[in-house]
Length: 394
Image (cartoon, rainbow, N blue to C red; front, top):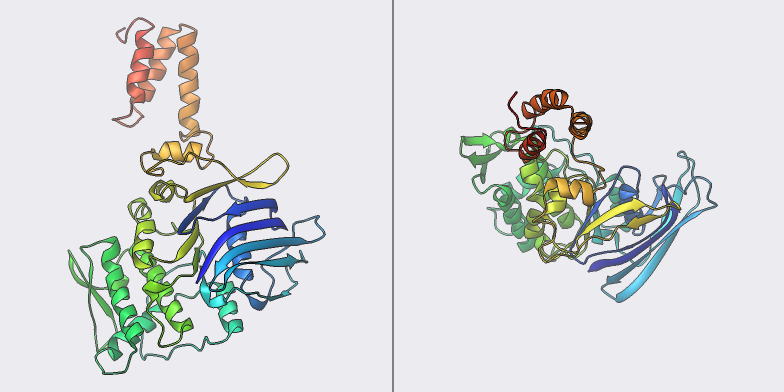
């Protein structure tokens, strides 16, 4: 069992100083590029790593960097610290880990491209029984290339008595369920014995799952990657992946996902892994919009270079009632959700109205009226402003 409670950082990567408190279930970290979102995930992984790594670097100009995480584990509350001593990309540093087990942390990095894999044969599971091999796997990000092999292996062995443990059978059922979690109209069907292809039933008929959209395949890759990785790291008699009560880190969760699925992915993850603690990074307002109250962590850099978590309203239903534009501007730090071209034309229109230049204002009005969204509320505002000049008729 693992729950991270707080993380303090000083002079690592681009972060001069930061103090972060974590929600026990879901944490959605957002903010501009360079503020330190991925660095936070990398630091957490190194807290449970017995390995040589060159990923973490001290902040330029600092003598060294440090980080301390406070957490609750199987033995109660504890803390662990690391020091980062180098800034040269070629240098590696040995991390010794602490009282956090590498098997209690899973890390999906931001490369989740999905290619079709022909399975001529089914390979055995990797040996992940020592902390060093698990730590190294976390540092590189858990692989997704072996997910299909794992699923087909479990499916083909499942009919044979005692070939799989009860937890492996449970995990297979969870993996089958993952198709319908995002879209109830898509269901797992079977694995073709002659080709080892995973077949799914869709409204358009029976297809290999590689024929699904890249967003759908990416989601399945996330779900299967987490399930099989939990299974690989646990003893054979431990309960299924649904009971995993560690920490799952996902960088840029929205990759390859359509906005509709971006709005569903948080709920889907918590449906599949209901007792895990998630810490994810995102640039997607749709993911932020789907988070519950207290789960969003907007990072920003203050006047002295420190990374801070900006205070946002703790509303009963999170930000689900906010528009995407409101989230972009008030949570994610965009100065204006409108395009620069729109702002420029609108400014010229307002200046023409204020200067009582009716002909010029009418010309700009016609341009805007023919360009903005047909249902945009700005149309009514523009019409009112034109009316103040004496109407829209020449």
